[in-house]
Length: 339
Ligand code: NAD
Ligand code: TYD
Image 1 (cartoon, helix red, strand yellow):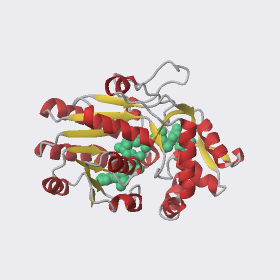
Image 2: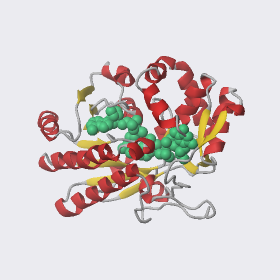
Image 3: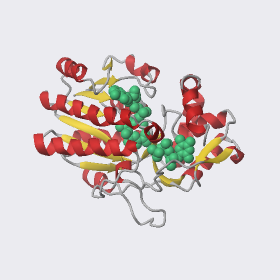
Image 4: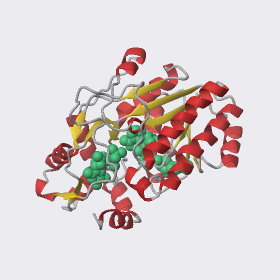
């Protein structure tokens, strides 16, 4: 199969590219990525040496570019990772999230319709369900949970999901959607919580914890997310939504302490800062459907995944040091100075 992966120079997309190249020697992979602040060609260095891999720089919302790419490549499957992905940035600049996450998804689906692509897979998020209360540990997000987005980021992802569902129903486009919980692992951009803790703690800098640190996220090692998407594009049913998660809920403060302990750094680095506006309290995925219907199970426990992730950041300093020495410094200053 020829698989077009959008956003493959970002965190999860790049891990998925490597997953495909390693596990499906019969497949070829084309990556379309606009190399925004979050995309990095050095992330794809090893993939670029593989003759089953092609990289194309371009914006998923650029209709002419996408059409000529489809005309040339005729992919069998499209997996759409490309997105603006950071909640805090969406609070500062929502417009870009609509252009990329909603309009970009529409452009990709229009191309799939025109070229009769065998599958369009939309990589979505558990954040489209809104949040759960902390005092109801019995509640989980299922595929039937109503969409109830809180941030401009999650609203844009929810909009794209609704559009994908409509393209399936109205035009018969073979769409699948996956909604995964928070990922962590190699190539995670340092603006997100876990790599932010690692990169700042290694420099003995403070770790900003929003609000009380009691918010709960449901963490999944990125390779487990990749194996789930891989199963969905091969065995999933068009028109269906699949939740992905590993029942690994942690409070933010627990995550911070776990990572600091793994690094051998003191908890005195923790600094409580002003909360994120509209901050979701708890995410918790019920992954029963994908387990039952496709036989998917996560394989990496949190402690093991954190140890692997910390080791990766220690062994790949050049990757993240280059990022945090550039434009990222201005971002950090702007985002955290007044907190
Ligand atoms: P990321 O920000 O690390 O990477 C996004 C990639 O998309 C970058 O390479 C960027 O250059 C590219 N991109 C952005 N706008 C583009 C455009 N207009 N055209 C082409 N390329 C563009 O994001 P991520 O964390 O890897 O997330 C990937 C996808 O997975 C997103 O759709 C996100 O909503 C979803 N998701 C993420 C998580 C998580 O924990 N990170 C969890 C569930 C779902
Ligand atoms: P993040 O990695 O931004 O993912 P998301 O908001 O999509 O879940 O944040 C994870 C949690 O960590 C979230 O509850 C916000 C919190 N957080 C902090 O406390 N401090 C930080 O500096 C960041 C970036 C996040």
